[in-house]
Structures are given as C-alpha cells and as structure tokens.
Length: 296
Image (cartoon, rainbow, N blue to C red; front, side, top):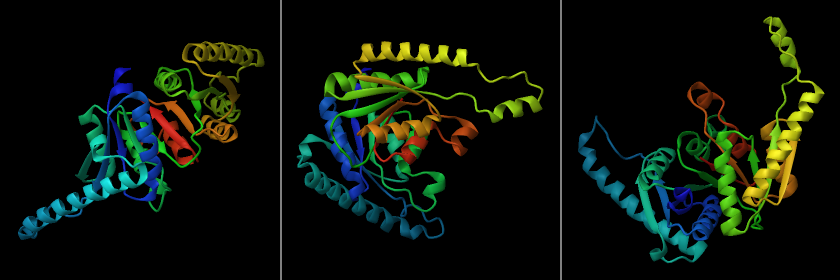
C-alpha cells in the first residue's frame, strides 16, 4: 500500500492538448496522496543508428541532444501554462524511443505508484493495435490513469468481480475516499452463461446446463452481502449489482452516474489472449468517455 500512495507519479505528455487532463489530474493526485511527481515526454526514435551510413552518427547524436533539450523546454512551458507550477515542484524526464516502452521502463526504474496519460482519440492502426495508454496498461506493472476532460466533482465508479485481481482497485478507491474525499459507487457485474453455450456444450456431449433461477438468486444475495461489506470497510457511499456484459455495464453505469472516473483492478492477460483480445480494462479504456484508473 505504501508504494500505491507514496511512490512518484509519472505524468506523460505528448505536448498536445490531449495531455492537459493528464497534467491536471496527475498533479492533483500526487498532491492528494503526498507523492512527488515528474513529467515525461518521449521523443520518437527516428535519429539513431544508420549502419549503411555510419558517418551520420555524430550528427545524429548532436541532433538528438538538441531535440531532447528543446523537448524539455517545451514540457516546462506546457506545465507552466497549464498548472502554473514552478520547475522546483517537479522533475522533467525526456527520453528517446517508443512511448509505451519508455514509460513502462521509467515506471519500473522509478518505483512509480501511478502513470497518468491523456486519453486522446485512436487513429489509423491504433484502432486495431490500441494506442499508447492501452499498451502501457497491457505491458506495464504499474497502475495507470487515462485522463480525459470532464467534471471534477469527486464522483467515481469502482468496478469489481470479487476476484483477487479486482481488490487493488477497491483498496485504491478506498484510499481516495479517505485522502481525497471522493464519493465512490461500488459496482458488481454478474455475467451469467449465455444461452447459446447450451447448444455448443450439447454438441460436445457436455452435461452443462444453465443455472436455475434459485441458483442465480443465491448468487445475487451473496454478491449483495459482499458489496455491503466492502462498502462499509472502504467508505463507499453506494453499491450496485447488475447482470450483463461487464464492459457494456461499466460504461453504461459510468455514463448514467456522470462519474468523473472509473476505477478498476487488473491482473492483465498473458500470451495470445493479451495480444489478440486485450483485457476488460483495455476495452473499458477504449470505450469510455471519462477517465479510467486501472490499478495493479
């Protein structure tokens, strides 16, 4: 828990307007939990090695150095313009490479508690491969906040499936309740087996049967009791339990509640599932119109 609250906060900027919500929310979070913060910009790696023209290396090194110096100046100017912060209040980190790779590396090196990125729209191949924020969530081991413009009324939606992977999100939200005074609604989505599964199971000779209404009622009662216990333990003001597809329900309830942020835990997928399907957290990031906090 100490790393969650006290580790440094990395705020990523691409120097566009899409980074403004990240700067605002990132600094606000760092100040709320008493953590240091740094602002990071990654210069695309287009000027490194040219094996067929080694004489260019010296010029390229000088060019890269100039680009990084200029980028640091632009970062400082953007932070001053958006936050009015003094350079003494934070650190600037500029690296060269792929943004997602460098952000993951820096987060691990710094012992970061949170990486904050702007949620800019997906374009081109990003619609298939995902943008930087999704890839940082996919490959990183640090909590990630994808910040979008919106209200700052302290109203958050916390999603849980009662698994071990969802508990970091609940604990983090509880910390925000205690330290930042947010108002949290705890949501459990019951995803029941779909009817088409019965015919598929029958084709393979499986004895699978849909759960009875009595079984579903028992599960709903158990879920309600668990929600109430967690709400009391972590100070959440409301609880909800809804049947349906987790991603669809989370997005719909966040919109209906006017939540400024969705908070959820994630262990992440591995292997082929990670590469092709992504996680529930990634899909929520992709579809949400509000900020999303994914807690490891």
